[in-house]
Length: 351
Image (cartoon, rainbow, N blue to C red; front, side):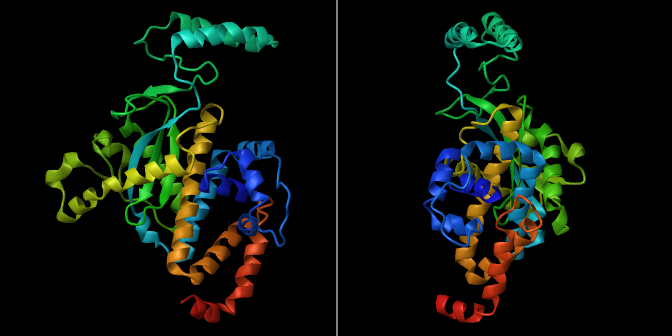
């Protein structure tokens, strides 16, 4: 199940298409720890959804943490690379239709006829009355009957002046581009008020590496929070005159987080969140980041060669083997052991 979550977000698949493609793809089955090809579905798609809820936010953060530890184990990154991070926020849109009051009222009129539970019907009628009474400029506007957590967020984009969803924050390594923290923030808070929590998550993810962020490179939306994040130092354009030459060079690389966000949305399913509620937003954000890191590790293996593959197998097996939910841990450990003797000959062939 762990491998299925990694593959889902690494290759932008739905739960249904994931299990179908897994039954046809020998590479995915090899990654999942299968010794022989199995031409059948690995799990029912509904089981993936239940397993995701069982893991919770702490569990999916452990999946993200494992990808970072694998990068260090295969020498694709060093612990000191994570002392300096770039942080930015984006909008994780919810899977809802464009909200208009007329459409929402029409849905509110049709739905009660199909509701049988009295408690659910009461809640639905309360939301319908809220939609009828709300005005265009009111605060706490309801944009979807089935997703009351949705906010209208403006990021000053030409093509999308307003987006409907939740705010998500991403932190990447300043030098390597590996995602070290990702979390959602309900309620559309000010960007600066999210920085302390984001850095706390990054510290928790990196604690086993013996390193924590000391510098955060951010944009002007994070001004005025230096006391909240101390002793971490924030660097942004508003401090340009007081920055050293090295810090100004770091600031020029702040835009590196933008293509990472673009890939998260285009390649790893962050463009639209189909999971229910605020908890679904939180799980989806971290899983998208874990999928991005898996693809980063694949590129690193291609760049560094077979040695990186064996080290990555050992690192993943170390975490997955003790877990009852990790089917591929023992297989990866065996793979690393069997191939270690023949590594030099294979490496010569690859070269």
